[in-house]
Amino acid sequence: MDEASLAEILLASAGTGAARTASAGGTESGEERRGRRGNAGGPVFLGECTGEMDSDIDFMRYALGEAQQALEEGEVPVGAVLVVGGEVVASVHNARESTFDPTAHAEVLALRKAAQALRSWRLNNATLYVTKEPCPMCAGAMVNARLGRLVYGCGDPKGGAVESLYRILSDPRLNHQVEVISGVLGEESAALLKSFFRDRRGGAAFPRKL
Image 1 (cartoon, helix red, strand yellow):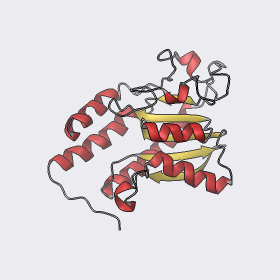
Image 2 (cartoon, one colour):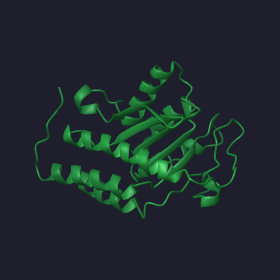
Image 3 (cartoon, one colour):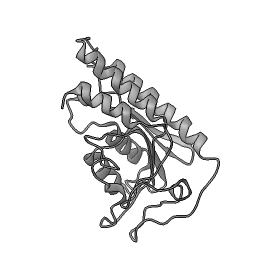
Image 4 (cartoon, helix red, strand yellow):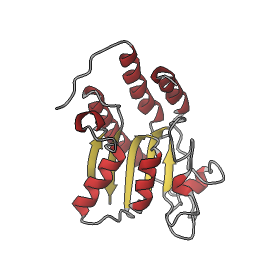
């Protein structure tokens, strides 16, 4: 599948931008989505919480700023922000091109940076905001980090491992599950990706950070 087609699919997958939660059995209702917490015994639904979505949007806009910076550097525009107790601990974007590192996805970089800052690999009290649905590598890293919560923008029907292709973060066979909110500023997130691939298709030159 070519990059242009992928970009069109990503934009379509953004939907209306409404938040929803992934589960092994399908998309959950708004009443259920706020209460998923990681634990060895599987997901637990604690009911609807109010007043949190504004913060989710604010932090996702922060992540979109990182994605925009990635775009300007010639990287696939995906940004991530890791938050603990309302404070930003890590703010990064994709860096595969500049670092020549195939694992330098925004999510992995955010987990690494946060773990170093917090002096702990366990991030069970953290929320990770990322502009695109994580891939299998990144989703697996979140399970290993015991991440508390993930909020992401647009889906990735060709590589997403949270809802689209796999449901790694809600798989009850694993020893940790992660609360997931999807579709937050999904259209904006997908539009950045579409812009990147459209410009690439047109032969535009991208600056590369050395």
